[in-house]
Length: 47
Picture 1 (cartoon, rainbow, N blue to C red):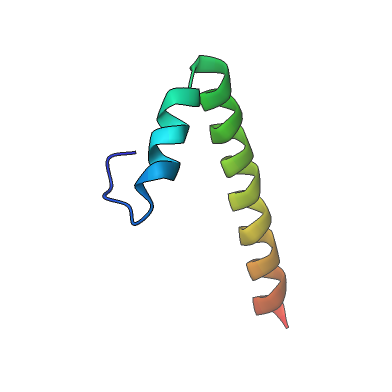
Picture 2: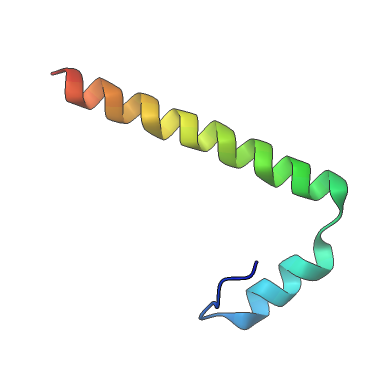
């Protein structure tokens, strides 16, 4: 949120929609996506 962004309206919209539950959801989804990317990368590097 503190990184200067090109599209300020997206940052503003996110800031107004954030609450504890939404932040937890975004964090959990991001962690799952990160794990998936690492798994795919690991699969590719095994070959």
